[in-house]
Structure formats: C-alpha cells, structure tokens
Amino acid sequence: MDCRSESATTGEGRFRVNANRKLLDVWLLVRCVSCDWTSKLTVYERAPVRSFDPAELDGYHANDPELVASRLLDPLFARRNRFTLDWKGAWRLDAPPVWLDEAWPVQVEVVFEDPVPVRPDWLIAQGLGLSRNEVLRRIKCDIPLRRPRSAGFTFTVMTGG
Ligand SMILES: [Zn+2]
Image 1 (tube, protein in one colour):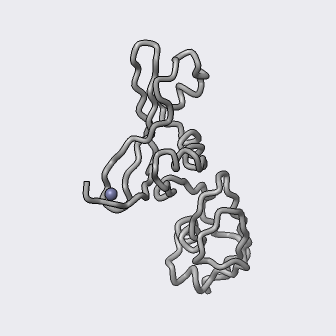
Image 2: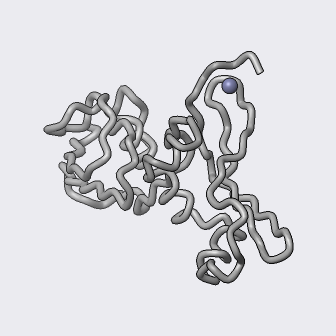
Image 3: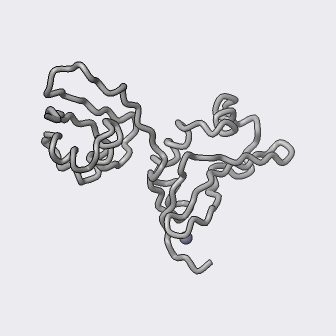
C-alpha cells in the first residue's frame, strides 16, 4: 500500500463477525477516505461467545447503526486501530416533509442524536431541498453555517418570494 492517509469512514457501517469454536472476532469495515481501500478494525478479538449480550451480538450481525455510531464516538477505538474515523456518509437526516401552507418565516430546530460533525449549510440544503444559493439567501441563523457543528441549533427560513 502506497497510501499514507490515516483517515477512514464507515459509510453506512458494516460489521463482520467470525466464529471460531466458542470464540468470536468482530470487525468494523472502514474505507480509506483517499484511496477507497477497505480495512477491518478490530472491535473484539477472540472473545468468548457467552461474554456477549445476545442483543448486542444480533446488532453486530444486523449492522445496527447505533453500534456503528458508538464505535465512531469512541476515541480509543480509532486510536487503537491507528485511524481517524470520520462521519462521511455515516449519518442520516430525518426531516419532516416540506411544508407548503405555513406562514413565513418558519423557524426550524435541528436536534442531533449523536454529535456528528456536519456543516449546517449542507444539512439545511439537504433537509429542505434548497440550493446552496437559496440557503445563503433565505436562511437566517446565529451560528456560522459553513463551520462543522455537532450540537443542536435553530434557524429561520425566510419566504422565497
Ligand atoms: Zn488510502
């Protein structure tokens, strides 16, 4: 491998579980952000099957997003694997359907379930189906929209007029 990038992303998040008699290996598959090379980061190594909470084990088999998020949030996990993990493609935006009949301006509150660093202008554009220009023109907000943020905020959408 020539690539020296140490930054990786989980994307949608996939675990691989390997059973060897009564021992399990669990890995999280990650992709290098510069060359797309896939690697396996060790979550558990030769851990006795009975030491797992069955629900957690099901979660690894089902690629549970909560478990992926918990790995991304664990600074020791990435460091132990000599990677910096980023959230590229590893988060989901739940936005209500776009309103049509509301009186303008509309105030919107954004709540984070996990502290995922995302750029507010991207989030708003995606959530409301607005272009970048429309975001600049119609969004009023007290926080810098281009700086990644991982905590809740509110913004106001002005009429498209
Ligand atoms: Zn690479």
